[in-house]
Image (cartoon, rainbow over all chains, first blue to last red; front, side):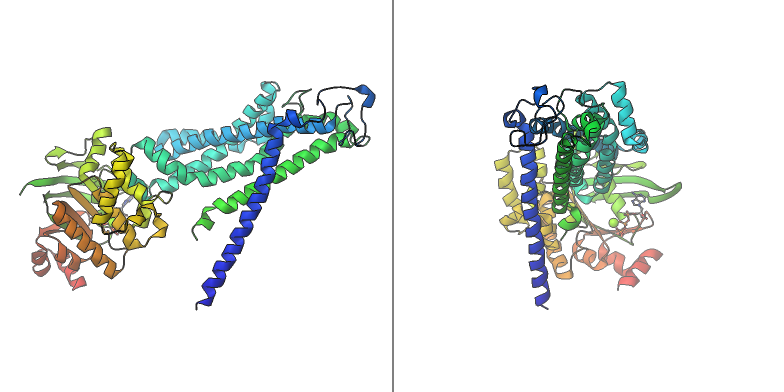
Length: 286
Length: 251
Ligand SMILES: Nc1ncnc2c1ncn2[C@@H]1O[C@H](COP(=O)(O)OP(=O)(O)OP(=O)(O)O)[C@@H](O)[C@H]1O
Ligand SMILES: [Mg+2]
């Protein structure tokens, strides 16, 4: 009788410790990536925009660890510099859609009625549209530029957050503790800010963290199509696009930004998974 | 005695799809100051609905509720929030009635803070309230899932007491607790009611408890008040057929 819970507890602790270490490890990696992005200009061994045709398309060697592109620009410097545009654009994007989508969802869930119906139909439209196609259309109407790519992707991505926030609000709106808060004299603002937001933040934040990787990919994708960052800005997607004809002759030109995208997306996705393991309400109940 | 609350012809119809269902069908009653009034009736007869109307958690379709002779149902915004200085409620499920992300102390202090009391003063009052409901002070920093049902319900009573209300509505406040804890909580409520001179509206399934605690009892059946009287009267000499059935089913 006494044995069983002890073992379960220990197992639980092992799982929790493992999750903790995973979180620390992946968190450190994600922070490292963010650090590189933030201090990119100070970390580049060469000027990422300096052209030198004499050393164009050199394969990786000691001087240029990732080789050079067709204008003789150092690939490592460009990849480091590119992290800034891609990652910051993705973070900005995720932040915008979390806040906007979350707010729309809270308003819909809280007030209900016609406003809710209207906003949800609008979000249906965005959800029903093939996202990337729509983003391409928006981005091309607004003409390139990485900020426009962010706007285009924000247009198609906020609705998911609105849905999540709304369903969460609906789930807790009628909880006795909300009635109790009302009876404590809290107005709408306080109820939303002090009781709704903290209680729905978990699932929304998890979705946001998991989305960072996806958003990096989509921004790189738009740039690859020439609808995001415009040359000569170092951006992973456009770097891959510019080098794509040289995939067979000088693969490093495509592979360096490609691997950068791959690694970054993987780090953020795994970190997101771990955050979900930690915050998931199903695990929290115990 | 002075009249505290008067409900007149309250009516509430819910719609399940298109089908109307009248949960409260013309209920009138009054409560005096310091009175403990029981409200009994079978499940689904509309007891909670009345509690929620009196506390303005839902709006009735018709009727009026007077508190100290003042209409409650028309109050808006700030005045409506002032109503909660007078009327408070203790909920059926103690754990669910506290925000899982906030400590019990925060929950109890919420009404005080909303009235503009500063942190230090609210803390002081919080400890007073915890003493009143015989809870240790360290419970202030606990979360709802870290305490037992009985302890949580004590905290809920402290929260209801915080604004110094004239009327506390207990909507089956003890039915989620086990029998011994039930008795403790009810004794506590009775003690507090006498000390503070509050009125208590005790919504209950259990006729024996009502007989023990209440001055008067309302018997409700299918959205209507069937009978009102002293508990002994009602239980020993039920006037209505339904009351007889209810009494017979218990004793
Ligand atoms: N929001 C609602 N929508 C539709 N019907 C409702 C709603 N709230 C209550 N009802 C119905 O109104 C009736 C009365 O409900 P109420 O909760 O007041 O019963 P009760 O007397 O408190 O029952 P119990 O003793 O089980 O708590 C029930 O039949 C219930 O189904
Ligand atoms: Mg009820």
